[in-house]
Image 1 (cartoon, one colour):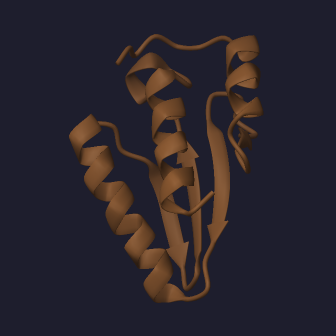
Image 2 (spheres, rainbow, N blue to C red; image 1 turned 30 degrees about the vertical axis):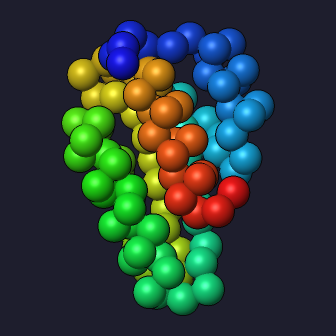
Length: 98
């Protein structure tokens, strides 16, 4: 998968099909907050994502407080959002059941 930085129009087009995701305030990332029923569900989600991210060699910036997981995605070496971020966001949505 390419690590070529996407332009704003390409990001906007990709986000149309990604429920819950939006451009981050920094203009170089996309973000989403996932909320689960409890900590166990949130941790299970993070575990599934961690395994997928490791296979992709592409890791999220995220935090977890109880049942909430806040995620920011960008490709550091490209200086912005790439197809890798969009692909990982899609996987995250599937893992979250959406």
